[in-house]
Image (cartoon, rainbow, N blue to C red; front, side):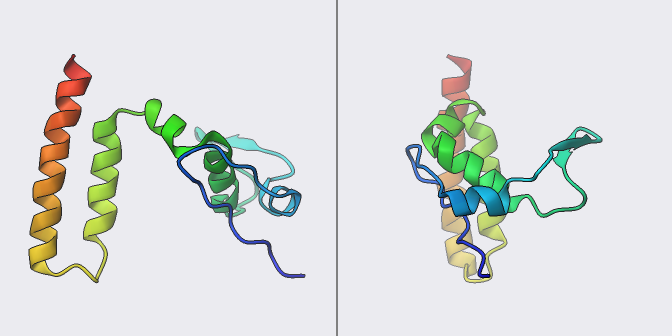
Length: 107
């Protein structure tokens, strides 16, 4: 049997299919050293399903914007497609966004 596609989070909340639910939701969630887990199972599909159901706008509301920007910068800079000029451009743009995020978090 073919696995269903991974849930794809969108800006607004979206449903997952029952096939995705049965494939990616652990039968039992356990807490190991403060982390969700279940016998070494890859929980990527589960996490993506939660984000799909929540919607990215709602998820962003619960974490400081500066943390999202930090994660975006780290992941984007690891992309081998970026040349030096694009890395510089990315860093400048994210620095501007970080300034806005700090302003919003202070006020």
